[in-house]
Length: 110
Length: 122
Image: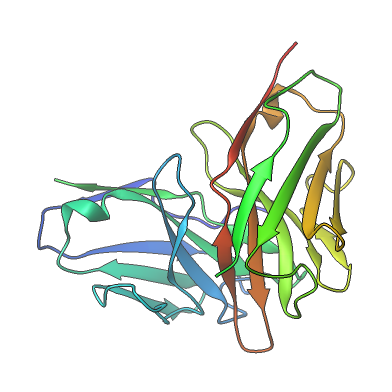
């Protein structure tokens, strides 16, 4: 199975908004509302930011939001803060009952 | 909140078997709707799902690694394990154990271990 497609990097200034895309197929992203997003600082455990396309876990800032259109899911971070700088990964359930990740996106806060 | 901790050798020789264990606290490996998983991240690369074992013992593996991977669970010790056979340098990675929560209406990685670096080298 091929990884979901994410941009390698995105950047933005404090206070701005950025969007990270995650493109798959009708057998994963497009076929199920089971897309989730993770923030990862190297050396630490990844942190769940969005689950089931658009739901925020308790304790996650409402600056983080998720959506999906067709085979592409998106994570939007508004009001960028320096602490948001990290790697972000999407993940999806697949029609083979397996799981798949995106290649990861490095977010730089300028 | 389930907590996970990986343990095992940090160095494995080529062609040998990589073996890791994940100890579960704050939850049970017999919990319904939870799938006990292994994920790895090679240096400079992204996350790769290796496979999972369900609360009922059903396994599912990444097709690209299926012939070399075995995940098992020990309910008496509340831990689960990974075996990756015939390793090469390409298997050098940080290995994370993780809990996948999947129900009829929801599916996401609920908990992660911090990860352990395994280097394949002679």
